[in-house]
Image (cartoon, rainbow, N blue to C red; front, side, top):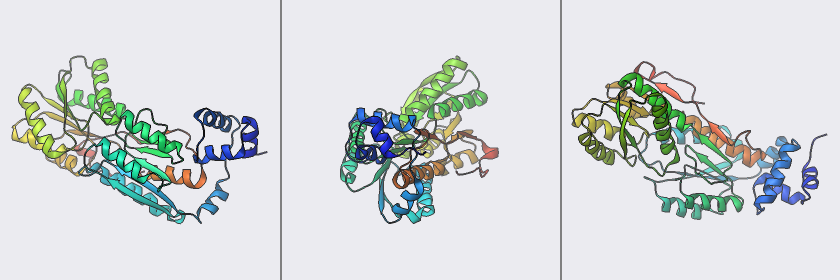
Amino acid sequence: MAVTIKDIAAYCNVSRGTVDRVLHNSGRVSPATRQLVERAIRDLNYHPNPSGKSLAARKKHFTIGVMLCSVGIEFFDEVIRGLYAAQREYSEFNITIQMETVKGYSEDWQMQTIDRLDGSINLLILNPINTPKIAERLNRLIDSGTPVITLNNDVEGCRRFCFVGTDYQRSGATACGMASLIAGEDAVVGIAVGSMQILGHNDRIRGFWNNARLRYPNFQIEGVFLTADDDETAFRVTTEFLKEHPNLNCLYIASSGGTSGICNAVHAMNRSPVIIASDRTPAVIEGMEDGTIQATICQQPFSQGYRAFYQAMIRLIHGIRPATDTILTSTEIRIAENLNWNLSEY
């Protein structure tokens, strides 16, 4: 016999309303009670009736807030395309996307935007800045009944519904391996990254550094410089870094924003380091086609956007949690010879 909400309530000695609030992440439930009910759901192998829920959901309207630090970063064009593609595919469920975007990484903007959206959305998808203040604000939003999905970047200490993105440490380790193959095991390396407040940027650097220490002890990593994922900033700081390190023969671009600025600085300084980039953006494609960039490590941005919306949809419509709260897209190596191969977007 199928397990019911009534069975879960009796097992936990709580009301059916409490179980329903846990299942739908709505209303206030103490963390201890939530853990008790969620453990019972797993132990008793409870599954909601999705067909009944979806029929009822067709009569409702849902709003998903989407917050992205994406202005000026070409990578996010594909993430956004994936979000809207999934919305069109599941248009029968009347889910609206309220898109909020900003240039740069502003904790204040994220805090103010969460405050503004609170109470007007049914679920929030965002690529968060990784600070305790953002994590605490998101947890308060979750406690008030609004589920959160982190997209492309995660945030430490947040009780989010799930994370949809890539394995950044694997991406960094892969970039390190490519650098050794092309620049050699005695490479002198500089690492460019957008912001140290973004968890994925930190994890890429960590993956590169750890793999170098483990497998390529003769690598000389000269340091990390910040581009703010902005081409003007990237040109300036790359020029300064190249002047300070005349023996540098390899650059790892650990975030795709600012790629044009980095390549332009390399040309202006008449240098030709091996460059391992991130993602398959128009700027990266241009750099690979003219020989400035030798390889790039990709992460399927369209799929990330699509899967984030899909997870939001099944949460809102069916009340179903994914089998894992970490949903990762593939790590792909692209070089000139396979740059334009059309691999699956999904």
